[in-house]
Amino acid sequence: MLFLLWILLCLLALLLFLLPPAIWMRTLYRRYAGWRRVTCPENHQPAAVSLDARHAAATGMHGHPDLRLCDCTRWPERENCGHPCLDQAAHAEPWTPGEITVDTKPIHHLPIFLAAFAAWCLGAVWHAQYTLRPRWMHAVGLTYQQVRQIRWSLAPHLLTFAVCLLFAYGVAWLLAVSHRKGVLPGVVMAVLLGGALAAASAVGLARLPHDLLLIEAGYAVLASLTVGAIVGGLSDKMVLPSH
Image 1: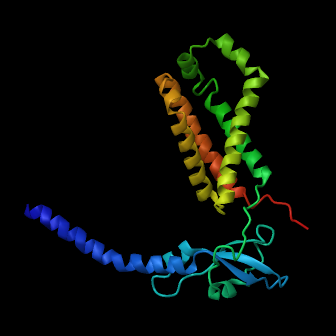
Image 2: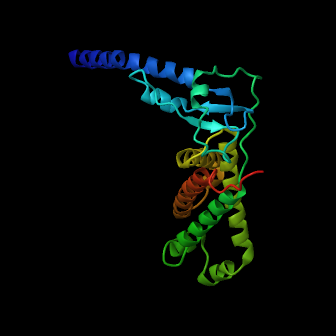
Image 3: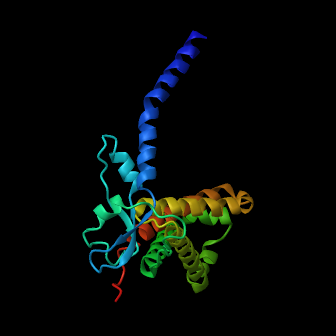
């Protein structure tokens, strides 16, 4: 009984110790979150920018947060402008609903096709003769001749690539509507989308043979992470400049 009381007191002390920093970080996050209206120093036209509120909260414990932009309505074409509007954005008030209209970020198709092709190639290696094809054949119940006919048929490869492409577009859409970019957000969106698809088809997946389920689940996880990393990491990299 005394031991449990001691644990509870230690947990209470820990919570009291962490509470002030948590409150301060939340205050900083709310202070710098949201879109802000600025006048772009380059073309002297109105623009909307967003400060990295998470980074500001994480670096502002000593009262001097490291401020940086994480998004702008002129990005990605002008992402490397040097961000001369940062000081203006830091002193601007966050926008209220209806004051600034921020369009959904455009979806760039080249990173999506690269991600889908990478996932398809990963599937080809994953199900190759010298990796998991023998176990896959045994789990599905196909002979070598039947698999050879499937391998030289065009339809299964096109169908697999189409599934990879649709998944990559889904990840890109989630990143666009949430105004996120980068490898980690891409991986997170891919995991969320893959988890939602797995939950929606849980009944059908449960009926698969155990070996087949393990093989396909392993490929699905690796392919999802690959697609998320490529789409998120290259979303603003392979973009033609607009005129």
